[in-house]
Length: 318
Ligand code: BDR
Ligand code: CA
Image (cartoon, rainbow, N blue to C red; front, side, top):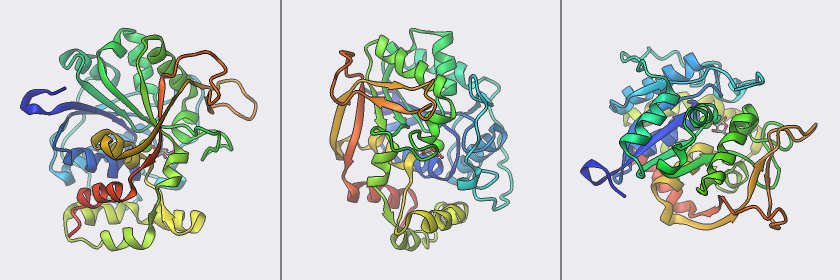
């Protein structure tokens, strides 16, 4: 489905975040998509930083996309951020000069609802952070899922191998109540949620040596990305070895180039809220024992060469 100029409108909810930044650069490039707004969550770091980072990235990329600040905390329970991964400011603490543009006055949740009307039935939504803003939007308007053309979420760990607690992945574990509301609302509306989970991310790592070579490119995008990602790449190399993992970039690859997905599985998925060890876990009903509908489409395998090609293009390598 297409919008003005033959492109599909795309709204990205994000908490930049080093891997969010790479995903955003990929989205800005996608010829078949028109990024109509960035709605900003708290998550990797606090909202003031994630908003500032989104505005800065737009400036670096020369993109004049409206940026809407959203909720500054999870719905119910406070949660630790991921500044140990992304830097205290979420962009590697390089001390960049702030962007000259400001965020819009309209709240992220209201922007999601408004744009779902403007582009009813066509709007693609990609969630790269905790699901707080979308959960609030769904509480304000339960008819929202019907107007969304495609919903893609980076989050969860589909066999329970998390990255924050043993079982929870960061985006879901940061605000499990929000994630629960989102998955239940889409299931109730009989709408599919596409999921790129942390375990898929682990299967699609890039060699640090390759990434370092790409990041020598001259283009301002590569220079900026090299700087903001340096600390987290060093941290990751010490922890996970040869390969670097850009979670949100994999979700965005699924959005902009779904033809390179090699295996997808549909299953029921629910979010655990009360477990003593498992709060924030995405419980996938692999054996279909619950009788619930298969409302989550899980990315299992994506063409690695195609994924890396999208990343190189986003960084203007060559
Ligand atoms: C997710 O958590 C965040 O730290 C990343 O930006 C990504 O969205 C990966 O678990
Ligand atoms: Ca993110």
